[in-house]
Length: 49
Image (cartoon, rainbow, N blue to C red):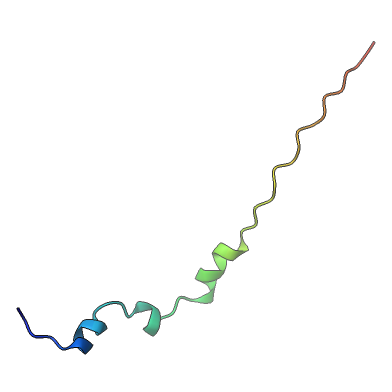
């Protein structure tokens, strides 16, 4: 079993978010979407002739 120090193991886990944070344009895309409720169905009108 290779001997590695705890700092080496911790460094290899994930450094993408700490060193290179995502640009604001990538994180704002999910917040820009707005879901509107479904409009009601039109009322049925009875036409008498």
